[in-house]
Length: 255
Image 1 (spheres, rainbow, N blue to C red):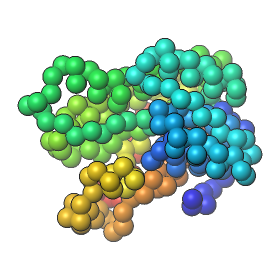
Image 2: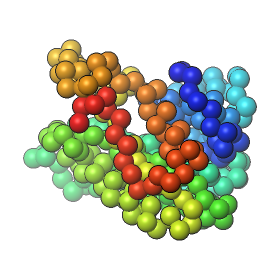
Image 3: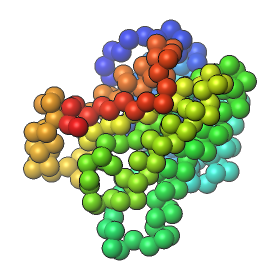
Image 4: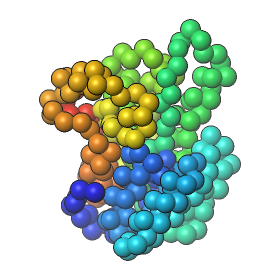
């Protein structure tokens, strides 16, 4: 893990991260733990999440709390948010990171597939915000960071429901910023480029595809999960006190 600046306001702050057990989410969980935050993370991947929590506990100021929940189940999502609040107090920061970028063919999908995909990639963003908002409001404010993607900007044809959800997150981010701003809650989004998670490397990365990506990027190296931590910490902290309703693109200069 890269050494990031320390943001004093994040020390002891209650942070809730969705999809925090693997990939980008695991890097985010570690990043906030190393800030001294009280981190709870929700994931459905039990074994890697437990291993992450165990590893980070060894030298953490506050041991991270892993909560297993299926975010497509709104009752389970609400219960997980309540469990995190009971353990750490009202969330100061919510990071909506959970996603599932399965490839799918437009001509083959049906309504059930579309709804299930949106239930993973868009719906929990709204309802996680709803779950933590009362506590944030009562505490005097906070920050929500939503992870969208540059994929919806690139005319990628192999995952239309996913890219529609990621575009929807931008609209939702702006709507939440407008609604929650008067309560002192900032809402922003991060749009990563093609991040080389273990899952991406296993399922989608080819030598040709990687070369094409690097050719389009201004910065000629792969984007790693840890590269998303710095932007997220910045948007979560009081350093970005007057930044809200914005989308920060972190794609190495591809766009």
